[in-house]
Length: 267
Image 1: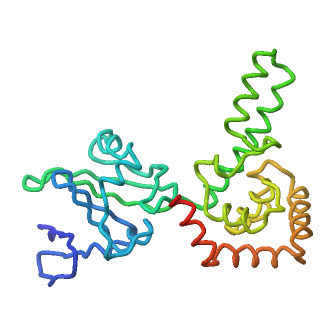
Image 2 (image 1 turned 90 degrees about the horizontal axis):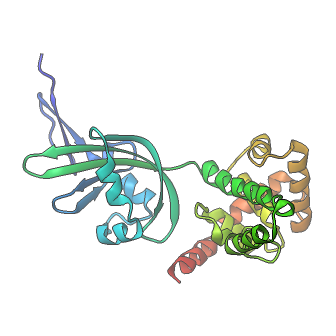
Image 3 (image 1 turned 180 degrees about the vertical axis):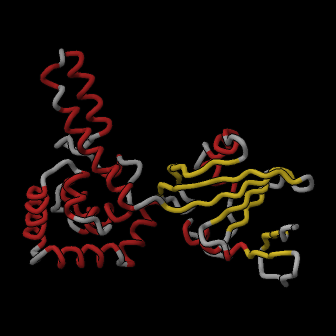
């Protein structure tokens, strides 16, 4: 028995008995098709949305490669025509940083040359914010080394702290974090009285992370997390955790804050 042929097209077409036509927009996840010989990139609607682009906007491959120089290396390093379930840090054309999950298939067409079909999604918000929290824990562990170092070692440690943890309290500034999320920047700007640790906790809350999971990720006790939430509520004159969560989500979704982010990236 011969199986029907499958075609992938832009736009719907008439189906037939021996051929299945699949519109690229019917693929249930963001998809990009890259034609290496012509440097053309085709995106489906979900891909445009994930990349923060309008559907009538042309994908600027030259700018993308400049912002993400490892892109070519990914294509060169694929083995047996397939890459599955990988994470990568990317800078979008609008300047925003994201962590993406992606899978890739490499096919060769005798007429069109090498073609790469790439499926991708944003990595979990929890993953990104948890990565930031982990950096705080690393910073605290590094500081504990100082009493055991000689003068040269202490000078090296001080130099490193100034480079990566720039503010006067030696706390990590959000600008130094590669995998930051927009929520953290918005929360920091909206509530400047919050400490860095409190901003991180708010970032976890606004991404719907359970309190027990926050305790696990930040290597703290559940009681300690509740105490921090109580302290945040007191600073912001908020009654309870639910009101805090509602307030954070309202601030994050505020259009004025989104505009501020765009201006920051454009500077």
